[in-house]
Length: 158
Image (cartoon, rainbow, N blue to C red; front, side, top):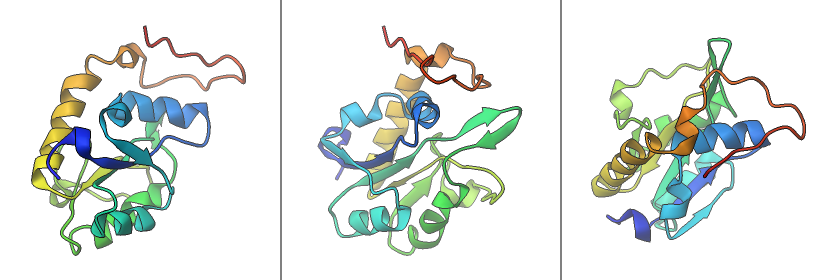
């Protein structure tokens, strides 16, 4: 797989508006550029799907800063990517394109990452994120955002 438009993505944006906001801010409109996207919300199962060719990439983009601390869905999500990805021939890196061997795995904070089945697709995802996140209307939102109150959270994508 070399083209983003033909790929199948595992992408979790969930557990409420706060995580969805963080995922949209970090991954932008990536889910709209792929052929199909799924979510098991189990990184090991999603990696197994990539290994068997049923998907091509997995993106974790739910981290956010609150009071100077990186928080997110589950800081353990990166562990299967760290342990299984390289052994299975998958490419693992962060959303800025740094490879796994340059990352510091920190179990005390959430970490965003991507796992991809080919070098060409890894490059395509990184280019897309680099080109489109800066242009994303959500970029203007402050990373240190206040906790949304129930019923008050709106995003203007205009």
